[in-house]
Length: 369
Image 1 (tube, rainbow, N blue to C red):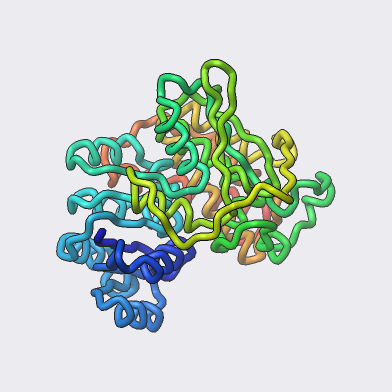
Image 2 (cartoon, rainbow, N blue to C red):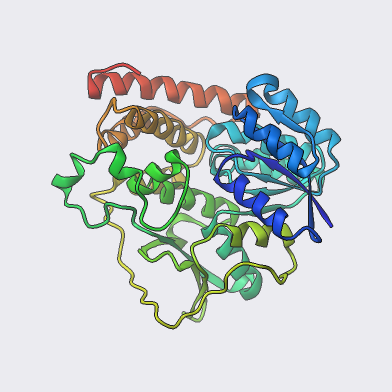
């Protein structure tokens, strides 16, 4: 019986984690949950699972810290979206809890610090993103020394076949309609711009200690192959399943075991899989992410912060879809070569990048955030 601490229990990852707990009661028990602001939903879930909860709106980060220190969890699932998920990742590790990580920003913004903290506390970090979960398992099976290349798959989002002219008039409603995945609004917009795939490239370089030239992206609209690795002999190995985030979540919860479960098994018969190169000129966020992954330092922090500002403005219908990469590119022209030595410095840099992105937003769109 593994004890679960679910960070962001009302979001997409958190909700699917709780679905696993409901259906595998002999394997998992929920000992603590947190939510941002959905009080009624949090209270219902606390009653259902018989566990304490913390509402960020009321208790802030200290509520999460107290719950992490007292709930006795074996593993925390961090499904909090955005930069807000970074500190909870550190809190879980500090409390001696293994971390099943779906929060990209933990790796993108502060991986050297988080990795050092995991080593200090002797805790494991297991990726939950479907792509990185796939790579994690494929590397386990192939052996790190045998892997020559990582290939991350991308759905291509809803605008994969749009012309550059069509991209100029994309609406929020169109961008929020993802063809294969059901996700929160921010990550859905990121999928449409390919910023999400860019963040995943940065993650892959850091999680698996790979240089940028050995991490590739291929567009695979069906989202059935979640990632591949190429071994030194040139062979490709893929992880294939239905596009259901419960698979990688469960994989992280049961690691290093593979466990029988209730999820639908994938049948190859009747499926067609297609693959295309990403259109880097039409979707510049991916190219920008590669440059940040290579530069390191604080460039990845700036990329993430500027993107969050730009996406929020787009969702609020204050800027155009293609203004998102313009704002991010402009922000990255500043000097981000300092290396943060603490989480406080990470957040300070994050705020500077947000301020810069806000200034660029006003200049580019003529509006105000």
